[in-house]
Length: 201
Image (cartoon, rainbow, N blue to C red; front, side, top):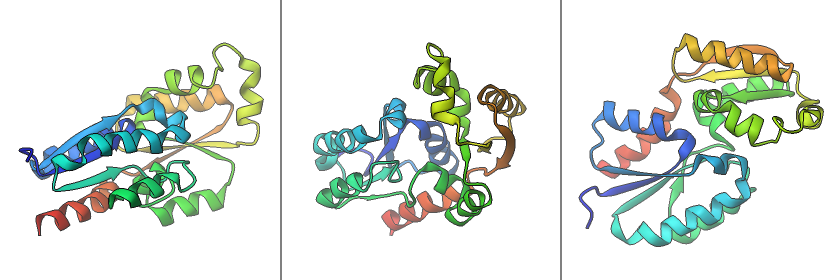
């Protein structure tokens, strides 16, 4: 048996936040294994990547949890998790557990043409958005990808002025109206913490 009794397979885009929650809450029984953040742009590859990690690590731990939402897999991730008897974070995507499902639904209803950034996506915008979507090489694709968007909402986990300024620059680059909505880590800590508490009982 591994020294840590529980494994968390996490999206690389959540690594900083998950590690911070482990530190501040003293969750020493958790081992965190992050998958590549670039899967954020290739959701069809997420179920296979999670399956490979589960096949490799499942027998080492008493408990395993997957720190992904559905993340654009169209239910395919849930099929994998059902096979292994493993749970995941709630929601359709990471914005749900950062902002809260009802809060995000309100934001979406208020203005459906909204593009969202988190701290991670703000930091890695050039790599994941500009380069990942080929906008650096083919700026003419901007209208194809973002022509139906009207605003960018930055869902911030930290209170970094530097990140806020960067998010505003990204909004200007995309030609979208900028809105800042601070979420902190309360929602993900609640959802993730509920699972951790169950493990401790």
